[in-house]
Image (cartoon, rainbow, N blue to C red; front, side):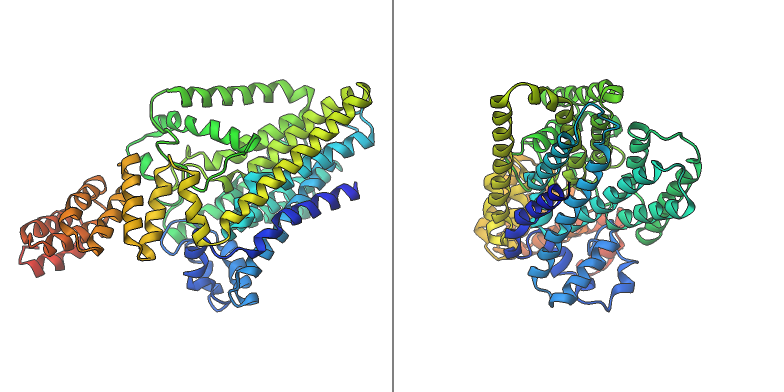
Length: 535
């Protein structure tokens, strides 16, 4: 068992090792490089009363505090950040091995030998260590939030199972679990799922009598409620960041139907992540409120998962636990409870992948005796297939890490990897504009608009590029459409007014400012005064 743990941890470290050469890429720039709260330890008190984004409604103070420690420890060098990510990835893998060793027991599989169960533990953890969908988590520094949540979740569930095997929990044990839940929540919003994972473990794999659980449930609920109240006091909101443009006008029912199209992508990325990309969005991800082929496929996959969960509940409780873990961990990132700023990101599949590999390991435990009695050739073929799968996954992870080496390498690959995602072109346009590569920015923004014209940020970005090039006459209709799509976006409206003035259309500028004041945007009163309009 110890050899398996060391092999899994060593392989995880080896897979993450190339990321030590990476710099700060994509979200790292905004969250770390351009965030003064991270630049030293003098702002530590402020971090716990501030948003995760410089402008936004996410609350992850523990992750930001860790970034500040890493900045101070390495004077802002990205090497320190990536070394911590690699270390955390190894720790998560070792914690998964501990959990697998605890649940793949002779009690659950009495007909299996210790050697067979050891093989199941090792292969489960090795598969997790090399899983290509994890690359974004350890190759991009902001993925440390995912790593922290997984650490606390795995440790909480493993300790819960160990303590429950001895009987009802003590007060100290309940407090320790509550502390782990709180730490997970403070690292990232997905930490709110930890109490549900404890419940899943209790219902599926715990064999002790269910006595004295009320205190544990109450304490976990109190932690969640307290964290939500504190979050609301800091941010003024409980739900989260501004929703993605594709959710505009979609109620819960329509959003639920549309998001079924994401389910096949979840399944593909968790089970066969041959193709990876950093941005997902329409039209490549067809989010519509009608039941088309992608939605029906997603519905079928969900129903299959539920059927497998129920079928395994008594036959193979570990498989049921893994499936339930995956479904629960996907819930916070499904955009059902509240729409968020992303449709899908590979990093948010990190915690759900724990459940997937546990379910696969449980299936292996059920299947392994058949291989043992099938003969030497079958065992050899199965071993070669397993080794080949692990090597293939590790190679894919190595190749993918190079994409996150620098801003240039990342954006060079982004549009190539996701040609049918409007967001891939949009964020490329934003990056090129920041680098003052205006022709490239215009091309990418126009490609984004051609793919999906419903995001006002794309209109604003293209309009700003044209304005910077002195082409305000062309920018006016683009910015006007952005204002029509999102009248509340004051930056788009300001740029529309500036372009109208640049082409000498003072009447239009005055009308746009007057409309803003009618909508309650009082900051445009000064613009009206300057233009000679009434307040």
